[in-house]
Image (cartoon, rainbow, N blue to C red):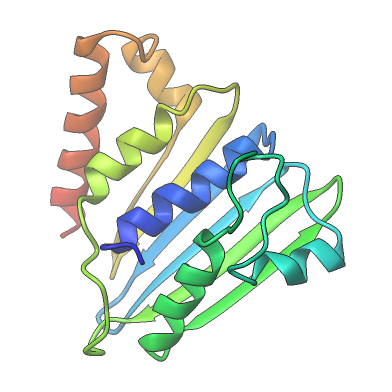
Length: 179
């Protein structure tokens, strides 16, 4: 089981990158009562049989992680969401992509901590692949949008310390502004 919502977020977006997605949309919508996360990608997608198996903790395709015998990411997030009385949905089409919807009820005793969202969003930007990531983040009435390509245009390549610090400062300031 993961510790925080950010741990799930990191794992699920990494799945999108590893599926060959060139475009990933990430919406993080927070209200007084609920935290909703939507992730959509244009990766390789799954057929209906594989999609059903992906919900089974004892299934792995053996391709992404050749030495693993289990695939716990989706089953763990399903369990976390359901334990808060929230909702989980996953849709996928082979050759088209995958979309996930998670909602957590924030007041529930089993709600995991959200975690370091600014640090997690920076980490998601840094996966080693060619993709664009569109982030929409809202907290009640306040929000911001940013894309990976916009950040690269603003700070340069994500390969030096100065760029990494600027990205972290950007997300930290945005999160502070909407809190």
